[in-house]
Image (cartoon, one colour):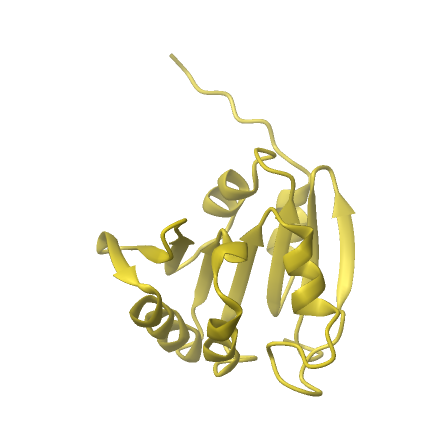
Length: 155
């Protein structure tokens, strides 16, 4: 049986976006499918309900603890690679500083289904990227998913 995949208009916006990106939308609207299909990533990290991380890369899939998994994410970002963190809303805030160590290097794409995490990331006095490093960025509401971009101009 042949699988038919409809082209989503968000795909082009996602490919054009630069810098660090937060993709959010309701559950089951296709965020994960879109990111897996349209981005060329070196690490795809999924934060589990039990607060572990499944890391997927060319070497396969492995389960790690939060600290080890995030250290590998930061290392990849420092090498200029693209990393996706899915179910970002499950990541405890005390680990956000670890991600901030790599800002604005690489391309980090965070995905989640909680608007509360959007408010925490983009609308607090000191964002995870550090004071003066980030702003609310641009928001583009697109068919079930929204994209928030965070980064310095030209990132």
